[in-house]
Image (cartoon, rainbow, N blue to C red; front, side, top):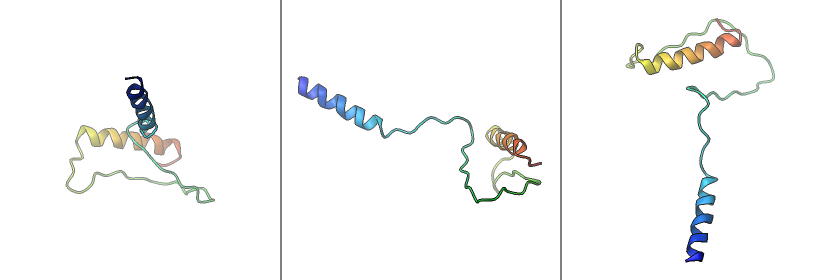
Length: 75
Protein backbone atom coordinates (compact mmCIF):
# COMPACT_ATOMS: atom_id res chain seq x y z
CA UNK A 1 0.00 0.00 0.00
CA UNK A 2 2.80 2.44 0.89
CA UNK A 3 4.68 1.77 -2.36
CA UNK A 4 1.56 2.38 -4.46
CA UNK A 5 0.87 5.67 -2.68
CA UNK A 6 4.47 6.79 -3.05
CA UNK A 7 4.40 5.91 -6.76
CA UNK A 8 1.21 7.94 -7.28
CA UNK A 9 2.63 10.95 -5.42
CA UNK A 10 5.86 10.88 -7.44
CA UNK A 11 3.88 10.44 -10.69
CA UNK A 12 1.58 13.33 -9.86
CA UNK A 13 4.56 15.52 -9.01
CA UNK A 14 6.26 14.64 -12.28
CA UNK A 15 3.13 15.46 -14.28
CA UNK A 16 2.62 18.73 -12.41
CA UNK A 17 5.96 19.92 -13.78
CA UNK A 18 4.53 19.67 -17.30
CA UNK A 19 1.62 22.03 -16.73
CA UNK A 20 1.50 25.47 -18.28
CA UNK A 21 1.21 28.74 -16.43
CA UNK A 22 -2.04 30.68 -16.34
CA UNK A 23 -2.62 33.60 -18.65
CA UNK A 24 -1.91 37.04 -17.29
CA UNK A 25 -4.35 38.75 -19.64
CA UNK A 26 -6.53 38.30 -22.69
CA UNK A 27 -3.60 38.71 -25.09
CA UNK A 28 -0.29 36.90 -25.34
CA UNK A 29 2.41 38.54 -27.44
CA UNK A 30 5.87 37.34 -28.41
CA UNK A 31 8.42 40.08 -28.97
CA UNK A 32 11.54 39.70 -31.06
CA UNK A 33 14.55 41.94 -30.52
CA UNK A 34 15.76 43.12 -33.92
CA UNK A 35 18.59 45.34 -32.69
CA UNK A 36 16.80 48.56 -33.63
CA UNK A 37 13.64 50.19 -32.29
CA UNK A 38 10.53 49.79 -34.40
CA UNK A 39 9.07 52.84 -36.05
CA UNK A 40 5.81 53.92 -34.46
CA UNK A 41 2.84 55.05 -36.47
CA UNK A 42 -0.77 54.20 -37.09
CA UNK A 43 -1.90 50.70 -36.20
CA UNK A 44 -5.20 49.16 -37.27
CA UNK A 45 -6.82 46.19 -35.53
CA UNK A 46 -9.46 44.42 -37.61
CA UNK A 47 -11.46 41.24 -37.21
CA UNK A 48 -10.64 38.39 -39.58
CA UNK A 49 -12.90 38.12 -42.65
CA UNK A 50 -16.08 36.29 -41.72
CA UNK A 51 -15.76 37.11 -38.00
CA UNK A 52 -18.11 39.35 -36.04
CA UNK A 53 -16.42 42.68 -35.35
CA UNK A 54 -19.17 43.56 -32.86
CA UNK A 55 -18.64 40.47 -30.68
CA UNK A 56 -17.64 40.87 -27.05
CA UNK A 57 -14.61 38.63 -27.59
CA UNK A 58 -13.27 40.75 -30.46
CA UNK A 59 -13.85 43.99 -28.57
CA UNK A 60 -11.98 42.63 -25.52
CA UNK A 61 -8.93 41.63 -27.56
CA UNK A 62 -8.99 44.80 -29.67
CA UNK A 63 -9.12 46.99 -26.55
CA UNK A 64 -6.21 45.10 -24.98
CA UNK A 65 -4.11 45.46 -28.13
CA UNK A 66 -5.02 49.15 -28.44
CA UNK A 67 -4.06 49.86 -24.83
CA UNK A 68 -0.69 48.15 -25.17
CA UNK A 69 0.03 49.76 -28.55
CA UNK A 70 -0.72 53.24 -27.18
CA UNK A 71 1.78 52.72 -24.36
CA UNK A 72 4.46 52.04 -27.00
CA UNK A 73 3.76 55.16 -29.06
CA UNK A 74 1.42 53.81 -31.73
CA UNK A 75 -1.69 55.75 -32.73
